[in-house]
Amino acid sequence: MELNEVAQHYHQHRDTYPESLRLRLHRALSWLKRAEAAEDLDTRFITLWIAFNAAYAREIDGRAMSGDRGDFREFLQTVCRLDKDKSVYRLVWQTFSGSIRVLLDNRFAFQPFWDFHNGKISESAWQESFQQAKKKVQTALVAQDTDMVLLVVFDRLYTLRNQLVHGGATFESRANREQLRDACAVLSGLIPLVLMIMQQNAQHDWGKPFYPYIKE
Image 1 (cartoon, rainbow, N blue to C red):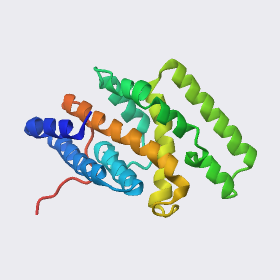
Image 2: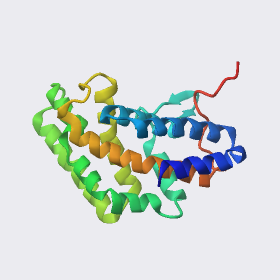
Image 3: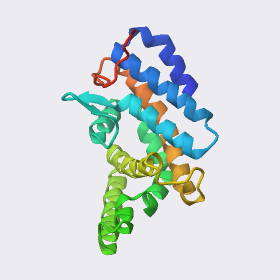
Image 4: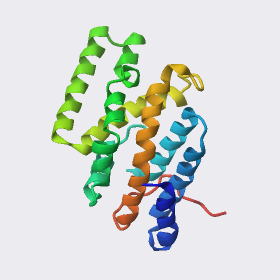
């Protein structure tokens, strides 16, 4: 699904949306537009991540869920459940199955690999954890458990997010191009679908944004 199609739908229907949803979509689309214009993978990935957070992050029990892991599972399950056209399913299993498999097999996007190199766990521990994660993914792939696959994918994306926003990578470094290319491909395809599903289910309670717009 193209950004222009999602944005056009938003502009045609935004006055009918609850204010909290309208604000989420407005913010997410602004960052998605910036991501589309990015000329480098680092900026593209970061702005795509912000766009996802704008759509997802919400207030729970008076605290911010800003995308720092949070409850991805619940959100992704909800999106997949409300996806009556199975567009996310097709994206995962038909369009980006190759990119997703490569990303999940990349040890540089697997946090325990870095925990080993930082002396937190043993080499055998991270390798065992990696094999267990791969088995978990294979089970989900066989069962075509879309939200579980996405949950594992976002666990990898979160590691990439940490590397970039916490200064753990060099701008336009050759060391992380492969995983960033796959990550950007997955996010740029998934986020517009998520935003459209949210619009098609505008009356669903998507949660209160933790940072509401305050008029002066």
